[in-house]
Length: 419
Ligand code: PLP
Image 1 (cartoon, rainbow, N blue to C red):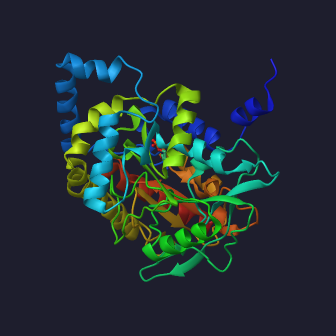
Image 2: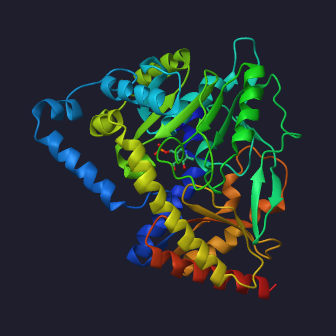
């Protein structure tokens, strides 16, 4: 049977599909022995898991709550109690001027990005084709194939700021960033997957201003960020205004399987997302909302994020960073300043092999990472740097991460010495 253009687009790309497929296959063939430093699965924070298990028991023992969890199609924008509780929390604790009409739940924030990118990118009534501007590359690979139209994304190379201790930080190059009439929205992940970069408050303010001047939204992907799950290890403020769309998620708290994304946006955008929910899935899942409603209403989600999730990942980041410093002594390896999320981004300047080849060699040694070249959606110019980086996830067991980093160092050393 032949597939439509849409069908072919959704099934034959070389981006996230091949990556996820490869990760899945490697897991199957390597089984238990593979060191998993490739995927985006969160770690297990025992105290949080206990809180959620307890809450689930309470729901299961209460037929009214259990019915809400499993037995009804909820509202288009998600469970009212959760949405009201969240709006009041965002007002109370962060001064965001939002009400329930500014919040829409989706089946994972990934789905929200599909909605938003196609809401603001693509063909407009006046015949203009608009793109989504990613102001900073590298950026999340999961965006790359979300456009119904080809080549939906544009991006520019970042400025590289060289820091002490062999670290560096990508900065938005505002001199190169062109927001013309062909841009429908600006989007940035904060913290950034894959680099752990946290775009500074000043950069966010500048992006927000640029977006406002053009009357387009600034989309901030806060899947790892503020106000929750707060996997941020540097100073940063959460920003929202009527021109900004903040996308949150319950996934990285430790609940990726319940598929709950949260969009905070202007009322019109929320209405549009509600329509899209209705068309795509009738209503968003209410499992996450029912499970987390009281934890959000009471504000406990803020405490959990600050007191459990953030220290858990910060410690893991320090463990991974320590291992890199130890194992990579004498090897030309630069580390992106790890300011958030759960990734180290390693840059091997002038590496004689590509990062994809390095990934293959590491896979043979039982270590799964992700080649950096995937993370440049929208960057059309050639750039050697794209093939010199690796993304290393440090969310899993500390000892395994240390062993994995030792093996990466051995392979990198070999690659440099046999050139
Ligand atoms: N945004 C970023 C930066 C991510 O890394 C991910 C998942 O890994 C998502 C969004 C989507 O997450 P979810 O659909 O689980 O909310």
